[in-house]
Image 1 (tube, rainbow, N blue to C red):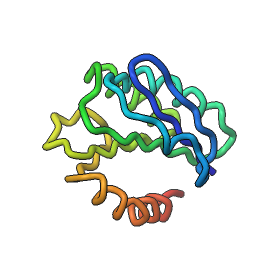
Image 2: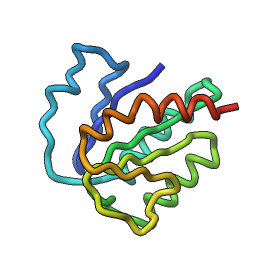
Image 3: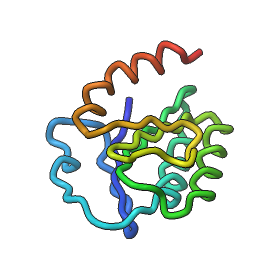
Length: 126
């Protein structure tokens, strides 16, 4: 069970469950990074879920708008049962912004390893 969201500094889009016909694939990227706003909005939706295990993957190509606040919100979500994992693509190192961050050289590498990443996480959930 999963949902797709995308965001920029002005709006958060909710595309619902993944599908081959999702409007997500037609979205054009635009400037603006509001990770903290997105984490608060999407995190609130995940916290409403009755599912025991919740994982939020955040695909990033840049740093957040507010490093301290995004770390705090990520830690709060984690404390409430949402595992927040940031997949950083094309970012050459970070100052430990997020509790869990994985670095990828490019999008192809990230996509190639995503299935194994998901299997590894799910196999370690209790």
